[in-house]
Structure formats: structure tokens, C-alpha cells
Length: 281
Image (cartoon, rainbow, N blue to C red; front, top):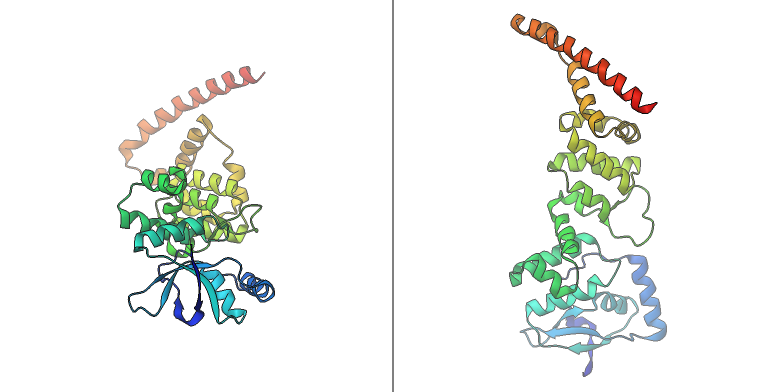
């Protein structure tokens, strides 16, 4: 494959490039390496219709760093490829980079899926990924934009208060964008782990009528109370219903039947308490 030297001013970035941001410190580090050793790996470009300029397929980061390093021309591999092939090649290269923002991966996957009219399964097979991974990344686009932009990819322990892809999976279980936003704020402010976030979201899904009350409390307090599961949770819900019942607002015809049912309930409670204590002993 022939490598040609092309002036940097005749090379332009691709506006549809999946990668939308570059870490300045990392870019400066690469530029310093290029000053010392040169640009070792050529970038890949395609000729544009004007016959004068070339559009980057892969290697935009190297192109930017080369300019910072003061290079006037850089080695390039020229390919004659169509738009879909460019997008696929860019995406595959960028998916191999851990520092590509998850939201950028999601946007690129969506563009490729739409341009080729692929199902999630077909897209997964093309890229050598699991269908679940594709669904998770595409799901980021269903979150409010300000949340999706903040999701980070991490290989180790994430910085406290950050929103990772694991956090995002939990947020996607909430249907209400306002709830998603409020939980995201709680993740940042209270530095919730992905496990704590999953538990908080589970509580919100189990008791949607208490969403405001739950989110106004510290997550630690909510999660401590959320340890209640199974039949105890149903009993708790009913207790809270009774606590919130305004007897004075009831129609007089409702009072006697309610009294009778509560008296029967007391008998059932006493009997079940006796059964539970016998089992515990």
C-alpha cells in the first residue's frame, strides 16, 4: 500500500467523525513524541471531489498533533472509499480506543445503523460486538442530552461523582426524563456508586408515588430503608397508605366498613406476628 506525503493544509477533518473531543494534554504529549521521532503511523485519507484536498478517514488525532509539532506535511495512505465505508472504518478504529466518549460511540453507531438499515444484531455482527453492548450504547441517546454528554468510559475505578456506563444503564430504567436528571444530579452530588444508583432506581420503580419524597432524602438513608424486600415491602406500602389516610375526609358511609376491616386486620396482624415469632425461635 503506497504512502504519500501530503501538506497538512490540504487535509481536512471529517465533520461526521465519531470522535468529537480531544484531551489537550494527551494531544500535546503526542505532539512532543512526533517532534522527537516523527509521525510513525500514516493517517488514512480519501480524495475530495475538488481534486485538491483530502478528508481524513482515520488518524485525525495524529493530524492535529502533527500540526502542533510543526510538521508541514505528513505521510498518508489514500483510499477510494464511499461514505459508509469511511464511517465503518472510523468507528472500528475509535471503538478500539478507551478514551472515546460513550456518547460519541452511540452517535456513530446510530449513523451507521441508519445508513445501512441494520438491526442491532446485524450491527453487532459487523463490528464484532455483543448485541447487548450495542443496545447499551444506543440507549445513551435516549437519555437527556446533558446526561449523555457526561457519561464517561472507565477501565478501572471511576472518579467519585462521575456517571459511568453502568450508572447510565440504571438511569435508562426510568421512563421520566425529569427523574433521570434528578437521579443524575444525586449521583454527582452524593458520589453514588453504580450499585447504589441501581438500588436507588429500583426503589423509585417500586414506589413511583413516593419519587419526590425519596429524592429529597439523602441516598444513604433511602438505601438503608430499601433493604426491606418481599412481603415486608407490601406491608410497608399498606402501612404508609393507612398513615396518609384522612379519616375526616371520608364519607360517613365509609367509616363503619373501614372500622370493621381494620379490626379484622388487627386480628390477622396478631396471628401473623405469632407465626413469625414461632418461626424465628
